[in-house]
Image (tube, rainbow, N blue to C red; front, side, top):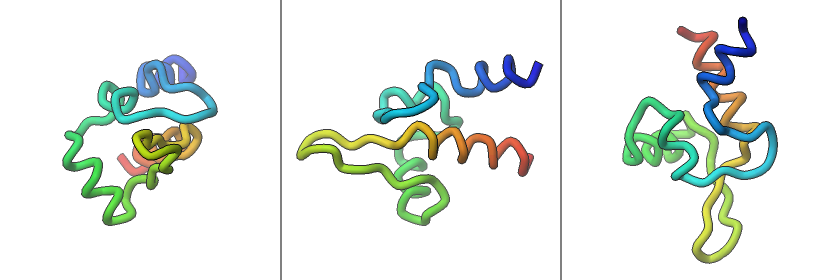
Length: 73
């Protein structure tokens, strides 16, 4: 049952690797602006700059953040 809940929460979020903003939009319950504000305030994992035009988050860090939010609720 817990695995099914995680699948629903994580959607298509891979277990490892990198995810871009477009991958996070369906998973996160807030807007892009709020995401960047949380990154600035260190309340959401910071992304990595993979190249000049590509910014991505580590999937493991996003999953960990989602798990922590579930425990806090």
